[in-house]
Length: 535
Image 1: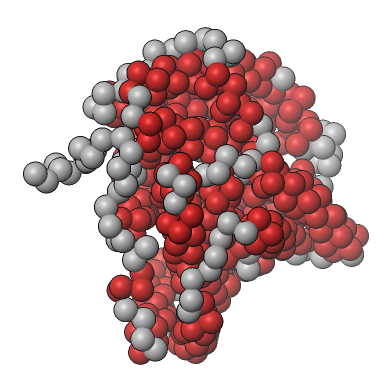
Image 2: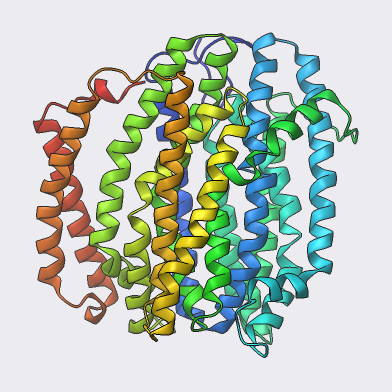
C-alpha cells in the first residue's frame, strides 16, 4: 500500500529510508521548498531596499536582527538540531515509543526554559548589547539607540523560533523535510506585511522590520507545532534538567555552539568591525550575505539536513559502508552545485545586485558597494557548503568536540584576517574597506572546511569512492565553458543599473539560463547521467 503524500511511511522504527535515490529525492524536496522561501526572501529584501535603502536605521536593524539570529543558530537549527537529531534517531531505531516521547517532552521543557531566560536577559540588556556590537561607531551615533530599541522587539523572536526548530527537527527525523523548509516563507511574508502596514505609522519606519521578525517567529511555531501532532507526537513540557536525555543533548550541544555556527560568528565579528566604517557598511554586508544564502540554503543546508539523520541511522546500525557512501554522495553534490554557484555569483555580482535591489532609496553607489562585497564573499561558497556536509559526519557519531576545535581556529583566523585586511584599507581612506570583511569571512570558511576534512581523514571513518578525479575534471571543464558563455553576456549588456527594472531581470535571467545550460550540457557531453546523482 502506498503512503499518502506528506505522511510518514509506515516502516516503523529501525527501517531504512527507501533505495538509492531516497536522499536525492529528499534533498530535492527540501531544495524546492527552500527555493520558494528564498523567492519570498528576495521579495522582502527588494521591498526593504526600495523603502529604506541602506541608511543608518537599516544598519541598526542589521545589528538587532543578527544577534537573536545568531542565538537561533545555537538554540534552534544549528547546535540544538545537531545534538538532538542523532539522539532521537537512535531512540527511533530502538523502537521504544514511550522513551522517545519522554525524551522529547523533557528536551522541549528544557529548551523552552533556556530560551525564555535568554530572551528576557536580552531585552533587559539591549542598550549594552547594542553598544557592544557598535563599539567602533562614534559615541553619539544614532545607530546605537535605534539598535537597542529594535533589539527589545526582536529578542523574544528567539523563544518562538526555537520551538519551531524543535518541531522541525522532529519532522526531519521522520523524513518529513518539506514543511520545515517551507515555513520560512511565513517569516518573509510577515516582514513584508509589517513593512507595508506599519512603516508609515511608526516614528522610525525601519522599526517595522523588527516587529515583522517577531510576528514571523509566532507564525512559524503555529504552523509547525501542530504538524508534530499529526505524527502522534505531542510534546508536554517537562522541566527536569537532570533527565538523562536532556543532559546527553546538552553535553553534545555545548561543543557545537561554535562549530555549527562559525559563519554566523564570523558575521558578528564583521558587524563589530563594520561599525567603524561608513554607516552604510553594515547594510552593504547584510545585502551581500543575503545573496550568499541562496545557494547555501538551497543546496548546502538541504544536503546537510537530509544527510544528518541518514548518517545517524547508519552509525546506529554500525553500517560503516552505508555511512561512507552517504557522505561521499553529499560531498560530490556539493562540488557539483557549489562550484558553479560560486563562479556565477562572482561573475554576476553587480548585475544581480542591480536587478534585485537598485530601486527607490537604494542607490547606484549602494549597488556597486554590495556587488564588491558579494564578489569577495562568494569565493567561499564551496567551503561554506562543504562545512554543512562535513559537520553531520561528526555529529551523526555524536562527536561534537572535534568540530569545536576547528571552529576555534577558524574564528581566531577570521579575527586576524578581518583586522589585517580592513585596517590598511581603512587607514588609507579606501571606500572598499568593507570588502575586506567579506573576503576574511570567505577565507575563514575555507580554513574551517579544510580543518574538518583533515580531522575526518585522520579518524579514518570515510573512504572516498572511486571516480573522484573524473568527477572533478568534468566539473572544471564545465565551469570553463560556463564562464565563456556568461562573461560575454555580462559585458554585452554594459551598465546594468542604467537598464529599466524589467530589462535588468530579462537580461539577467537570460545570462543565468545560458550559463546554466552550458554547464549542464557540458557535463552531459562528458558522460554525466542521472544515475550518478543517486546516493
